[in-house]
Amino acid sequence: MPVQTDGRRLQRLCAAALIVHLCAACARRTSPEAGTTAAPSPEAGAAATPSPAGPAENLPGDEITPVYGKAEGAPEPLAARLCDALHALPARRKAACCGGAAGFQAAAECARALSVAVRARAVTLSTDEVGRCVEAMERSLDGCDWVSPLAAPVPPACEGIVRGALDEGARCRSSLECAGGLRCDGAGPTDAGTCRAPRAAGPCGLSVDALAAVTRQTRYAEAHPECRGHCAGRACADDVPLGGRCEAHAACGRGRRCVDARCSEAALPPAGAACLGGLCAAGARCVDGRCAAPKAEGEACARAGECRAACVRRARGGAAGGVCGMRCAAP
Image (cartoon, rainbow, N blue to C red; front, top):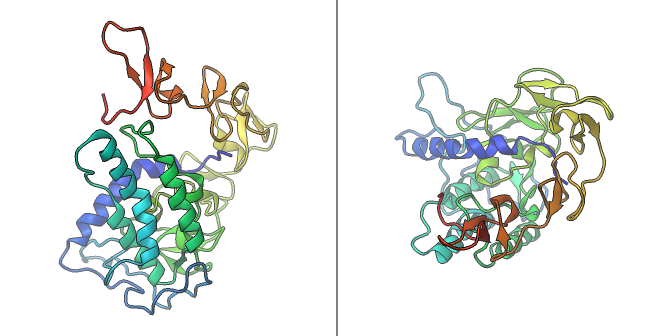
């Protein structure tokens, strides 16, 4: 069920975070990274003990280095498998549909940062959960009618599978490193933070989470909320109670939405029903006020929102409108 998170902000800032990581990694001097030479990672899914050493800091006068610094040796196999599915697999499948080379994708950067976190015993991965994510990605990329200029969506099976092992008060690089319910306060692409409970008041929404960005955990804020209520105008605010007046879904709190200017916890409608505040249940989308399943390749369409990927214009002189299909590049 859709919940308002900082996923949109994460998507906008993901590219910027990657650039900072890649450029900083080329610097001559890299700060020592906690856990990069630690003992082998725990077995997949097993409980982890945080590394006694904290993340490296960028001190005044130091060269800027990424919060996930140099990783020694080959990446962790489970991290590499997950990152390949999230980044390289969509690039390969799109190249096969559109022709040409796969081009740049962030699988290597994802595997490097995630391996640092695993070796530092700050996060754990489950073999079974990673396997389900890989299978879900492969199914979602079947055929070519998903291809668009945008990144391929992440299936629900891939969300929430990077589990934090650090307790409150521990130094951290990402909220994904903190145990459930805790947030890495102050962390950014080049700065470490501290695991803490959600705050009642104060600033929010001012940074991007480097590990969440490269592992495509767009809904990480559900398990690691920044505020006890919600973030509004870069400051934490109390949630509007059920039935109270609202202007946005986020104001009503997790699991609720703003419907007809009132906070509601009504179930989201399925395909065929009227939209609820512009929202629909998983697998459907709101088109002209009603929930509808995405149209298949070759079906007639008037706008992109009706299709799984794109509404492609018909050949000149043909019927009005278009048909659903793939689009390899922005028009």
